Image 1 (cartoon, one colour):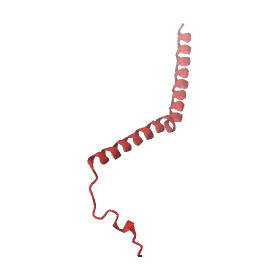
Image 2 (cartoon, one colour):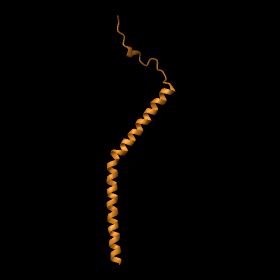
Image 3 (tube, helix red, strand yellow):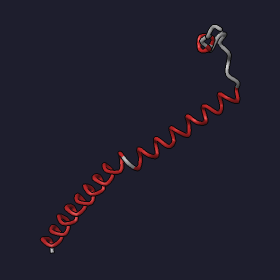
Image 4 (spheres, one colour):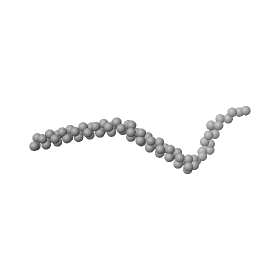
Length: 75
């Protein structure tokens, strides 16, 4: 009895995948990309968004203090 390697004949001859299979694969890829984008939004960018928010808030406080000081000097 001779052992044949079944992997030598794998993909011979090349066969075109069906449209149904192609659509299923592309839908899976799109779902993974969406999940990746959402994960990135709420993890990687979350920290920088908070930092930007606090920087804007601090800038607004400084501007408000300057405006209040100039109003008090004009009175």
